[in-house]
Structure formats: C-alpha cells, structure tokens
Length: 137
Image (cartoon, rainbow, N blue to C red; front, side, top):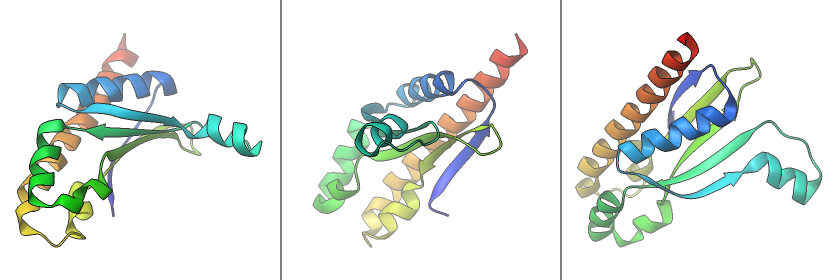
C-alpha cells in the first residue's frame, strides 16, 4: 500500500478544513489545493465525486531531504487526498513517505521518511478525533 488513510464521517468541506488545520499543527503548509471535481467539470464537462488533492510540505524536513538527495524534489510536495467514498464516508489519505522515498534508494532519507510518516499518522488521528468530537456535540 502506498498510502496511509482514515475513513471519517462528516461534511466534506469540514473534513478538508480539519485536515489542513491538522497538517498545519504538524508543521506542514499546503502549497497547492486541487479541486479535482471542479477541474474535471471545467476541462472535460465530466461529473466526478468530491475530491481534493492537498500538496503538503514541511519546509524543514523538505530542506533536510533535498540536502541528502537533490532529485527528491521530483517527489515533493507530499500529497494528501480527501475524497467521497461510494459508501458516503469521506476518506483522508496521505502518501506513505516510507514507500515514496524507497524509490530513491538512499538510506539517508529513511529517518526523514519515518518522521513524515509519523506526522501524517498523527494528522489522520487528529482528523478522526476532531470529527468524532464535532459529531457528538
């Protein structure tokens, strides 16, 4: 599996905002926010489920990684996706940085990938916890 993910209940836009806030709390900025549904409608006239791609970057970890492997920029930023499932849930899924940097075959990146992985796990946990709390109110 090349992603780590969490299925949650809640309003799609609220899940996106909660995800962005959780990323921020873990030191990530969202460099780009691609609304796939709107793009496919505009460019192709095609309907698609709600689907957002958030390009997340932690500047300090990106800097460290680029110093170890200059070509790492081809794999940045790390994408986090939020989309509607067929069952009506909302899935939050982040690229697994351990899988991603594995293609670079540079052991110096392992500790950075582990750190990003741990932070993404905390982001997903926070999103689940925040949305569960909001639904109990």
